[in-house]
Length: 82
Image (cartoon, rainbow, N blue to C red; front, side, top):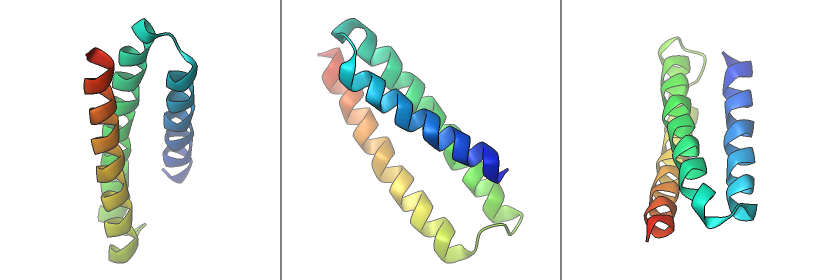
């Protein structure tokens, strides 16, 4: 599971870099793809916590950071659609 979380994190990072250098018509879809991967990452981290692979402190810190990233991506999606 740890490897999947790591790979997913790198995919999200890659998508955000692609958004930066893409043309306007491609940005929204790339952002939506990143948003979907963030939701999947949140789920995997929750599962890791439930099977005791993460302690409470690390879990809460990761979830808080992912919430903030999700808000940023959501705002970026709204901005790219206008």
